Amino acid sequence: MRRPSPMIDRGNAADVDSAMTPMIDVVFLLLVFFVWTASFQIVEQILPSEVSQQQGAGDVADVDPVPQDDFDDVVVKVQWDGVAAAYQINGQPVATLVDMQRQLTAIAGIRNDAPVILHPQPAVPVGVVIGAWDAAKVSGLEKISFAVNARN
Image (cartoon, rainbow, N blue to C red; front, side):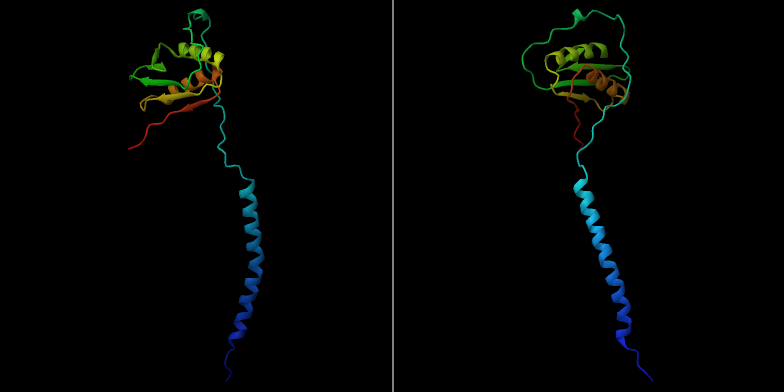
């Protein structure tokens, strides 16, 4: 009786290994190519929406004058009392969203790259926050960002 040789089984394993090596090389080359060509920057896009403007609501002359000094961040706080939104620009209360847009337009006339930080309370509905963001964007300001609350 003849004993089976251990060399016979190794021949098939060597064929599989020799076929897998080039395929693994190609996969790694593709991986390196896609990692090098990928863009890791976060893409910001303008949210498409329509902001309605009231026609003939008031004169432009009733806008509060904005000081001509160089200023830091413009902080727009959006608060919610359960019924309506209340706005503040750098701690000064603003009556309506239209008034807020007028003041931000006056700021953009001085310096359109002034950083604007929208700081909504957690209870503010998303639609109100997007309306404030749209008003800031329509006013001509370029750098608009959101403040976030730290989670505990």
